[in-house]
Length: 299
Image (cartoon, rainbow, N blue to C red):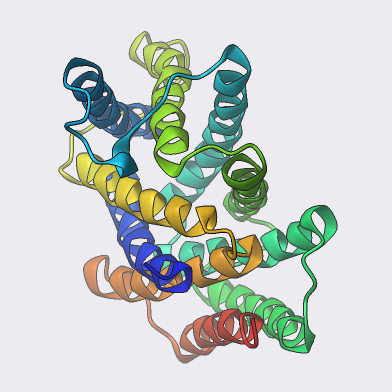
C-alpha cells in the first residue's frame, strides 16, 4: 500500500478513536478507562505472540514479532512511558472539553512534528508548508474565539493547557517512531506489540491506586466504547507504523495527513454528542484542514 494512502486510512480510524475516547471518558473515571483499553490491546498482541510461539509460521510476516534484547525492550518501553504521560493529559482534557474543540487542537500535532522533523531529521519544508503552518496557527486563533463563545477560554482553561501538553508529547512520540522504525530498524508489528504491552503495565499501578481509593476519584462505568477505542487505535496505529516504515516516508507528511482525523471527530461531536455548531467553529476547523492540506503540497 502506498504510504500516503496508508496515512489517510489511518486518519479515518484515528477520528473514530477520538469519538470512542470521548464516549468512554464522558462522565466517567479516566484511569480505569485508560487501563482497560490498553489491557484489551495488550491481550490481542499477547494472543498473537502465543500463536507465533506455539505455531511458528501460522501468522503472516506482518504480525511476526522477533525476540528483543534488553536494550530494544528499553527503547520501546521509553515510547510507552512518553505516550502514557501524553494520554493522561489528553484523556482528562477530552473528558472536560467538547470533542469538536479538542480534536482540532490535537490535529495541530503535525505542525510540531514538522518542526521536529526539520530540526532532528533535516527534513526541509517548502513554501507551501510554511503557508500551511501559518494558516493552521491562524485557524487556531479562530477556534479559540469559537471556544470562548461556548465558555471555553483557551488562555484560562486548564484543560486546554493539558491538551496542549498532550499534543506536544504526542508530537515527540511521532518523531521517536521515525527513529524506531527507520534508524533503529524495528518492524511495525514489533513496535506496536510491545508498545501496547508496556502501556498496560504502566497504567496498571494507576488503575490499582484508583481502585484502592488512594485519592478522590469519580465512579467508573463500563461502556462498549472502551474495547472499541482499543480496536480502532490498533488498526490506526498498525497502518500508521506501516506507512512510517516505508523508506520514502516523511514523518512530517505522515503526521500531517493523520491530522485529517479531525474532520471525522468534529462531525461526530456535532452529530453524536449534540455539541454546539457555530459558523466560526466551522470556519476554524476548515482552516485547520486547509492548512494541513497545504502543508503536504509538492511533497
